[in-house]
Image (cartoon, rainbow, N blue to C red; front, side, top):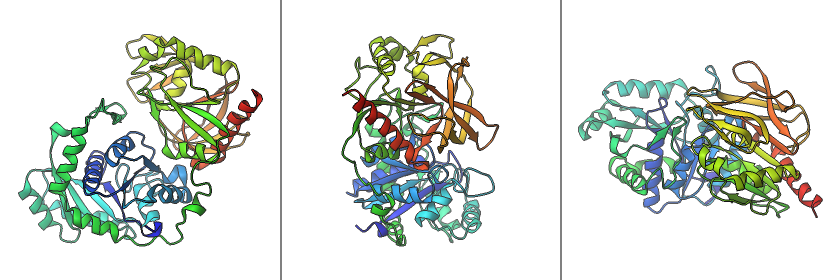
Length: 463
């Protein structure tokens, strides 16, 4: 199928908690049950919802973030990931118009919808609601006339009769179905939101149940017709937007920590490493005792605090990572990865679990958020990502803080939050760079290339 004419639709909501993630998962499952190949996407910086998309679609889900990536990179990622799909389903973030600032659409679902010219289905929590749904539809459809609000999905309806009332009330914007309250089928959650959707946390019958409900309660024929009616995206060329589409010839091997403790990665970041010439090799720090033969290590975020005992008890792996760092091997770590490289993790019960001891200081867990929101980073010195003066955009969402931080620990990031005072971070120790910031490399593709260059150079130096 021509990329310009890819059927697509965007699932948004009146606000967080209305049910857009469940609706998205249910719709993807129902479409896949019809034999359709679904390309899944998530607006914003979220790591967890894409794990559910992957389970429902049987393929990776890609983040589309207007503030971190910019329009060209959003279009490039969409073009590459939607290639070969029968339909693209994009889940929004927060409410339809919520984004990086309260007075603009920057970083919002609405911005992505307009860039992709995608029709929007609005999920409404309709519990205790009847005619008011028409006012909600009117407000959302008139707030930004450039946005194509194609229909409503009414969540938490009381009955089929209640859904009929809502359909009758909203004449201008059609109600394309809804879902009853299904508390027994709710997805499990923890402090960062949903639990990651592995088989241990989320059993397959849950996905099957929601796909079945979508087939029963949604007008799938009408929804598919809306997606197919999306206008052509003129000038959308994957080859031009993503010049090195696919993996380049491997120049190095990068070990990617991937298990229950570490699994927060932007799919786009991984693909950029491959495009720059890296072969990615996954390994599990919680249970494996040796590193695979690699030329660099990438520790993403996750829940190392939840598996602190397993990580700390695996002294063989900690010793291997420490030896790799001491020998000059490049290591890049974000958030949970930083916690693993620290002296230890202090959990909420006050116990300290010794970790790799490469970055000085303990990662101290708190019951309250320690940082949340978008940030812009400027490198103050050369690092394994490239020269000083590099600018990148990222996001923080964490319940821990590093303390105490000795003055000898070099900080190479000047961090500028969207809200709050600037600070310095980005801890460097030899060939190691660790930070609480989750950087999206679409904001500066040179960072991914720089990391691969550092790994390739270390590989050459050892020959």
